Length: 275
Image (cartoon, rainbow, N blue to C red; front, side, top):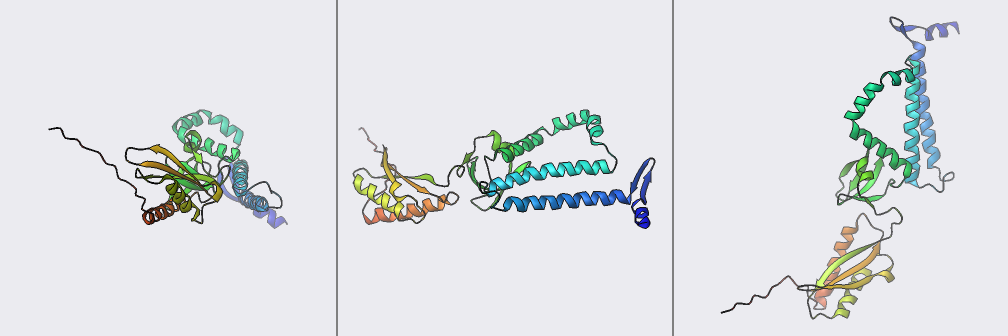
């Protein structure tokens, strides 16, 4: 026991009044190990559905991220106290420096605060599909400063959190994954409106990814310059791959129109020449 005490009190570094002992190193290692184990237990606890039936995967992830940042902040403060640096004195002494750094890193702090807002409000969760600046992104990770998503081209997108909180963002999967989409198509004047309506409905219904077949709607929306403009409305849960589904339905429409002699006109103008 006496040998262990001597080992822990052994001085590794001695600079003036400042001394680093083996005990300090062991204590710092224990802080990091205990913090890692605590976070691992919290993560497993949140993933157990028996305890949090109301929390989905995205919400559990948000709670875990907030807990992780807070616990690591406390652990870092304990490490500073262990090596003899008082956190309160450090903060008070560096107030002016922090103001200068804050002005220089204003955008970074804005992103960090935005990240805290996203994690606490849970308006955006892991797996949500967002429309940001005209791009469709599936959120994979929400960090303290940035979030990571995957677009339809399977390219990872790094998004500053302030871009999500300050700009207009469409969350396609916030309330429901059952969304309505539309396809615009024009047919030549003189076409049978009832036939066109029937063909468009059949085209949507024939696709396996279209939901609520009774809610497929076809509307004659306008009399265009060269065509009768129709709009096909349908519901689907395949939000992220909806453009591929639209393409498939357009192919079906083109085939049915060709089989029933319904033509899709191109823009044309009449030119009158006076002599």
